[in-house]
Length: 117
Image (cartoon, rainbow, N blue to C red; front, side):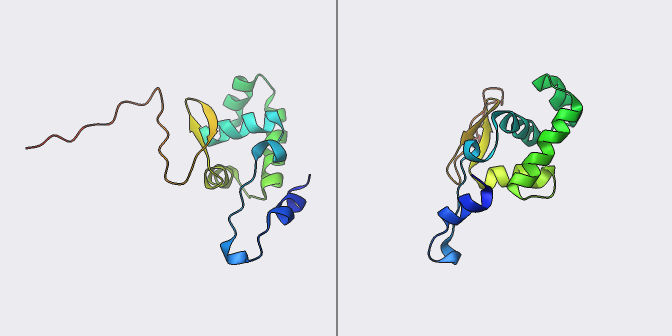
């Protein structure tokens, strides 16, 4: 299903109250989702190619397809789009989160505790 068709089906009656959530699996291929994950991590094409065991040319094809499908202009906007749609990275995987939800990471240091003086 094309993005515009998908969005048309999700459009509420009152535009100002629109909060459209898109399922990544409906919009992107599995490999494009893997590429999006790497984009969210800030990896350059060369690193993405190495991590996904594909050529840099293939990475560029995936990135261009993602930009087109998400209707964004660049990699940064792609990552922002994913976060705004409620997708976050947790332990190296894309997960759905609610607004304001904190997703702990296994490799993140524990939060510092405030000490009373």
